[in-house]
Image (cartoon, rainbow, N blue to C red; front, side, top):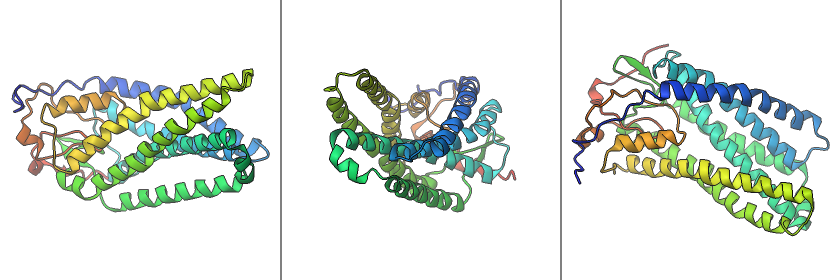
Length: 315
């Protein structure tokens, strides 16, 4: 097998200029009204307040924040991955998007633990089900993520210019990965995705086993919801973040893929990663070039010489 990269060419990424905006528009149109309604209902209409309603409200809020960044991403992809809103907007929208993806997973995990305690350990749950417990947990989660977001934003610009177009959240240098991006990415993936996913995959089956003993229609509906969440976790969240973690560890540790990094990148993008790149079609990729410059937050690798890269100065 030829692992020199001489026969590896970058697959066309034209699809993202049409697919990503289409999916984002659908998510925005359907998701924004739905999550706003859920946030309003569980925050102001449900009485008395329960741990479940508190976590659902926070989950809806995290999803609303994600959806509010989509108009910028839609414009970015429709403009052929050229960012025009300036460096600060790039950092803010980028970190808000990624941070609240992990916040959504964390609040889904909180709901999972709450349901697990209610079904498997009901006597303990009766003593700790007061809503102020869930409020404390929610405040701690938002506080930790808020501080991390603020630190990330204040650490300086991440936007770079390549081939005459401003990129946002991609084409980062090797130094960026070795300083802030590697640490932020690994910690976020472990504590914001992988650990919560493990908790979901352990707690929900235990709760389902207990619920399955109850032969009522309500119990059967609850089982269907649990199975749906497990399928979503296994097929959507976990594979994407496992791939992302492996790629991040490789990039941060200067251990790059041996065979066609561009095709690994495309496979990862198709699993639902973040901002895309606008690489020239059918451009040969050499392994020595991939060591020069590391791509976006989701693991892309750029073939451009870092000396030709300049920070984007759009304000």
